[in-house]
Image 1 (cartoon, rainbow, N blue to C red):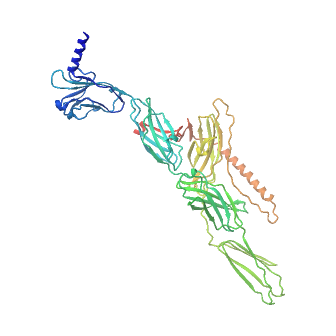
Image 2: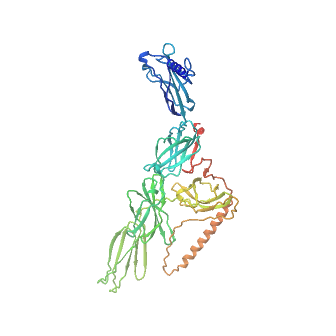
Image 3: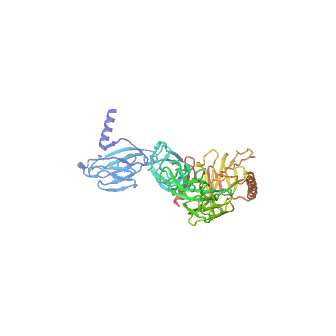
Length: 610
């Protein structure tokens, strides 16, 4: 009986022409080809169809595509295509970008003329979710220390994207050294990377992540940040007095990692120390083109026996960097010449002999009268000096003394440009996690102050890694900081004018305690750098104490005035200009910048589309 049943099934199978093909497994988003073929050389071109589910007794159930053997007659969706060569009987069905919902049984029926002889194929398609497709990323903005990129969300692979990953490295480094940042807000299409180095070339790539895995790497961006002013001063500054009117300055460029671009020139700033007023004169500047690893220049038209202070700054196209430590040097002493008068044999005639000298600096000449050997005649030889600058000629006799001062109109002058003095920063109060501060502008310099900027960092961090740099207008003198993370912070400020930027102000050191602890104390540290030189010469019996006592008195009066000024400014009402929340800095409704790895700036998809 079993044999009869088996034979009947076999006969039915042969009559109906049913064939079951191997199952196909595909990944979401890929294109899949389902193959069905007949002998067109024998039968000619025949009609056929494809449907979903098992093949019924006639036609195709849930038909998705149909053809008369020569062309396409109908299809359920534009995702279905006929591929293969119809002339040889290839009735292939291609599904574009398959989804998980495309999984199931597909049946192909070839309509062969005659009874019970249609050719039929059934294929089982299984579509599994996959990783997201690679991202296409593009550059939006490149600045000195920030890089903004944007991307289009890729196909998610059948599972929602859960995060984006950003890799950033130096151009010639390996990707193993790249710093990776994860962007968990999957609705974002833009991110700003901060804390980059100026004038550096970076490589950037991105990945999309879902529950299945991480996509292939995106295209690689090559971006070079813009130049900035040097962060370090020139090093190994040396001074050498060449003569009574010139000093040679020798220095080396700043360290390579602190140059922030190509060095274009150096600014040499120098000024004379006035022994009478016991203070330095107005600053003079000289520009020198950057050409080699060790630079030098000669300062001329100086005064003899005079001390000078010298500063050197490096400059890129973005501006000048910090000045080197102040160096001091004195020009050589003046040249003195003395000629004695000779004895004349004539008793009634006195002859004068003059000798001329030509120099480029001040020369003092003294002629002393000699003993007269004749009762009625004397001979004096005088020295006359011709100079291009100041000339002093003194003739000293036994009875009278005369002095002549001569100012040359050919003396060269130097253009002076002075940045503003640094402001003085004071602390109004520390209340909870709120820091209120104020500042007093210093001397304007050679042009009015155009604004201020504040630097803010953790106490254990370097100033090279400040957490915030915020600008203020020239008429603002107060600010408030709200800090959510208890720690100790350093705050300092700078003033700006059209000439340049001042030195750093005093540094405030403020500690924010944990909530519930009493914040009864805080500390402010004034860190100022003042370089001065005082030279006192005891001439003509003047005692040193007569000079020091007035100086001490003047410093005491200045300190008293400064304290009164700070107390008066402390009483002003504050204005909220700056606050920090969750590590992000907000200023005047600007958007947050977040550090690479910890901070990032982003813009929502809906904002970009609008």
